Amino acid sequence: LEENPLYSRLDYVKTVSTVGGCAWCTFSWLMVGLMWLLHFFSSFLFGNYGLAIILLVLIVRVLLHPLTKKSQISMAKMSKAMAALKPQMDKIKEKYANDKAAQQRETMKLYKEHGNPMANMLGCLPMLLQMPIWIALYSGLNSEVALRHAAFLPFWITDLAAPDQLFSWKEPLWLIGNSFNLLPILVAVGMFLQTKFNPAMASQSASPDQAQQQKMMKYMMPLMMLFIFFKAPSGLNLYIMASTMGGVLEQYFIRRHIREQEELQAASETFVKVSGKGPRGARPKKNKGSFWVKRG
Image 1: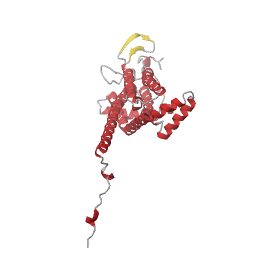
Image 2 (image 1 turned 90 degrees about the vertical axis):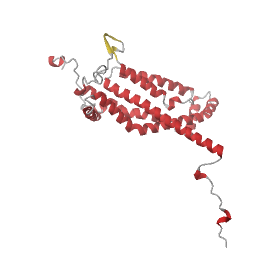
Image 3 (image 1 turned 135 degrees about the vertical axis):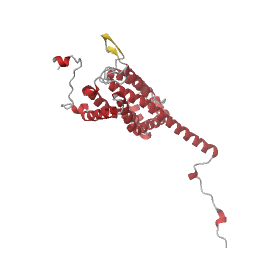
């Protein structure tokens, strides 16, 4: 196609087949559905595909909210349980200081007795479930003609099928190219905030090894996202950024709900200890005595 003068003048020719032998790995069936949704949403959003992508994010976040809430509560409970187990874990480390295999074996045994050590993995599940959407959206942005030069904002993100290019220069730089893309940086910042406020990451009861791993993940994950998506289409980065920022906001409200429930439970337990009164249903029934005995 590039050899044809008619097409070469377009300066952006790319042929993408979504029905070939690798269509399964590009989620072509999902891509078709996403493109239909974006066309439908843009029809009542002034033809703005950027707003359509944000609406798609909102719908996906709402659908995943029950799972997200459950995973956040599960991780908060797990962090609290780990804090309670820390004295026993310290004893195991002291006892098996010279035997790492025995130390790991006893630690896993302790986890199995008091909880599921894999509970923290639930926190990654909502993001993992969205990865097929990322792949399908990437394929759609590269193959859907209607999204070429489709703008989100008139002064920025003027082509959802290309990097946002806040500003550019002539000579390409190593790893960066010839443009400064702001969206991938916002994606990395959002990923950092989401990781930082994760209940599992905020736990103070982690072992030194776990704390080191958490610290590496907190910084390495955003850097990896920045490197992978720096030159990705701005439509894909817009979706990931909006989803990540929405996740940070959602995480804030879920954590606030967890704190309120814990404070309410603590206040209830304090009241019971001070007053000596248990719940109404747990109070013993009064002995009605001889007053109710039928007299002759």
